[in-house]
Length: 422
Ligand code: EPZ
Image 1: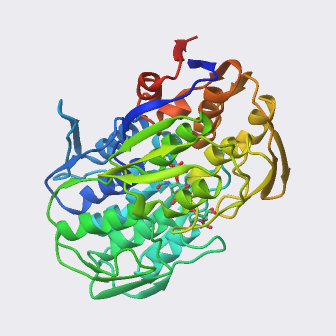
Image 2: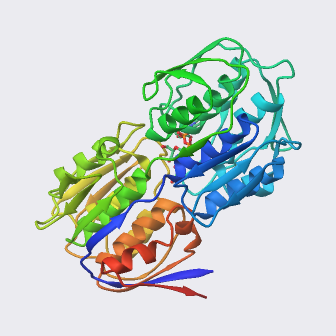
Image 3: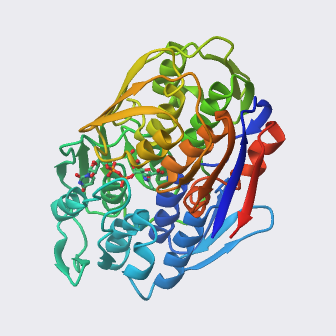
């Protein structure tokens, strides 16, 4: 099991290129199920989650290969085992996004319930509601969702909002299923995340008829068949935001390439509010900080609100602000595994329900800490860059799920991160 050993404090400078989006890649890989044949995807990042998704598709009967040049191809000609096995799903909750396409393609699907994870409960009731609205018969058996639509699916109007707002992968599942349903489907309170827009654009490239892309109301005219596709996924806005915080927390200056600011306005707004400079530059931006960090309040919301996937990283940054901040988590109210670990590094964080009071401290002190989930782990790396001394982070596999060899991306910028296998 790998451990990171991080010496700080450092000041980062230089240029870094954002990889393709993990959270766009995963549903788009599932969408390949809908177009029998060989689909080729570009800019898909080299992450363990992508490998797990490839394994999942392979068990369905698909063929999956990563070319030397990074292109990834999926041959979905044959799907003879429409089952998402628990042994795979438990390693990656996003596996649930094969449910909709499998049901639409095969008329039947069995996918293990995801179960909970470090960021909290991961219910799928809205996924089930949406697919039942399209005519699927769904029941649970031995921890599996069994979905059947032997006569196909029928378009309908369905409200997909839940107590925490829209659902990203729930929208993906219903959207993908609706592309092959008879007639028109309207998804109200659809997720507006750029990753869903990317999925919809990819599906249209495959022959789907989706309008309202990027809005909370998606309309889909069902078609008979979708074709395989060649498609390049969008850049990863969460990785871009993580690099922005790396520049800010080290009082450095980074040019972040392949980063679209238009999909990151909530995070950019908070950074500017904190006294961080964010300037558009070509197909990316330059992020720097010279002045002390100003406190700021952060509340996570579905897109276009502040992304929950950047909450932990911003909390690490706010830990060093000159004053008190409040971080409120409205998407995953328990997503605070990083709080105790940051406090081990001399942060002053107090959890009050789904809010954390962040009392800024003049410096963080290095310590041995434990990674828990993907974004909490990224926050610990960022804290280690700024902390005085040597921070060690165990269970680095959490970070590898969402960031391509992050130490090989940060060390050329001035970080001092060693990956040790213990
Ligand atoms: C996606 O997860 C992302 N994962 C998550 O990123 C991200 O945090 C999340 O969206 C929110 O933006 C991928 O895209 C692979 P949700 P998803 O359904 O779709 C509740 C990362 O770090 N809900 O939008 O599973 C749910 O409990 C990962 O890259 C229901 O109540 O999240 C949560 O409170 C972590 N019923 C809220 O909705 C449902 O049926 C949003 O969850 C589904 C969800």
